[in-house]
Image (cartoon, rainbow, N blue to C red; front, side, top):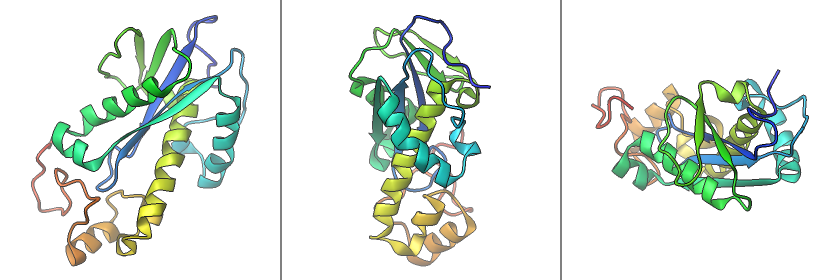
Amino acid sequence: MLLPCLEPGRVEAGCDEAGRGCLAGPVFAAAVILPEGYENELLNDSKQLSERKRDLLRPQIEKDAVAWAVGIVTEEEIDKINILNASFLAMHRAIKGLGVIPDHLLIDGNRFNPYEGIPHTCIVKGDGKMMSIAAASILAKTHRDEYMARIDAQFPQYGWKVNKGYPTKAHRKAIETFGASPFHRKSFRLLNEEPSLFPDE
């Protein structure tokens, strides 16, 4: 059972990212403020939902939310600042895009770069515990999947419409065959034998 909030009466924004482990494409993050007492029994961690259910929930969340926004950090930026910092930056951009300033941020995970002026709480596996983080996980995932389907039309050989940029065997084989595209993260281990520039991320 997901919790509607950590502290009743406080305006909380849930934040989560999508695409951190991908070999190609940007990392997306979303920030969502839900109405107090909000109920939606279908809400869950986006990874626990089918693509069909995520696609059904996205417009519902966007309609019901007090405020929501999506932040994007490009593959070029990821290569410059590393994927961990890029994930935090994507969340910052999403928070900045909110039409309502929250009192508190609920961050999925165990680390975060503080957002100036707004306190935060990190919650490990928060997308399976808090409604606002679950909602953010769904928006981040669906917006990113939509983007990857669009760029798949330019580079269909990599199968992004199916693998969304994640390191599947078929994706790595395509990189081996065709080389890296402009959307690939050059700092990542694109082929298994390549050393990663950021082995800890």
